[in-house]
Image (cartoon, rainbow, N blue to C red):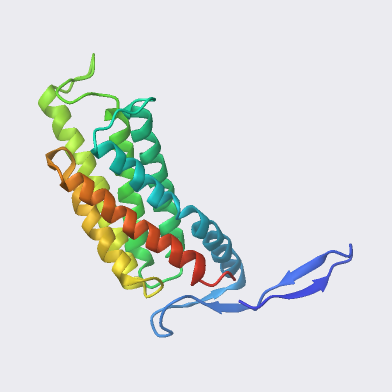
Length: 221
């Protein structure tokens, strides 16, 4: 997007953008956006390029938890940090794809992934096989709830991976890796080693590729 500079009455530079700008993708599939939307997309992409590095960071923390190594702060703070970084990465990835032809499945993946994070958060502090005190749910129902939360989060990542694969904005191989990692995430507590560790490695590879490509190849304006 070309931007010219003019002076306002106060002497400060005024940034003037063209009246219309094309969204990423093919001309016959995407619509022209007015300048107010173009400026919004530029701001979202600037955020997304930086926030995408939260995805490999979350994968590292998830992989660390799967190894069963004792951590000084405990597993709960590490798991909460990993989930928080995953939410940031979901928002960044959906923002990165906001101007592509796969923006609709990306938004759907973001909403489903956020629902999975909301379901996972209340269950994060509970050990396996223990129900919360005063909860109307039994131990078996708590297990089903944790499984449903994992499946929901995995479905969100699966849609985001599909969006990356079809976007033609970044490397489609990263979308394939993200979809494979989503299968491991959706397996939840049913996943046996080494599947959780392999899923974390796939998520690390996909996140690193997306963050690296987003920082280098995606236009900054």
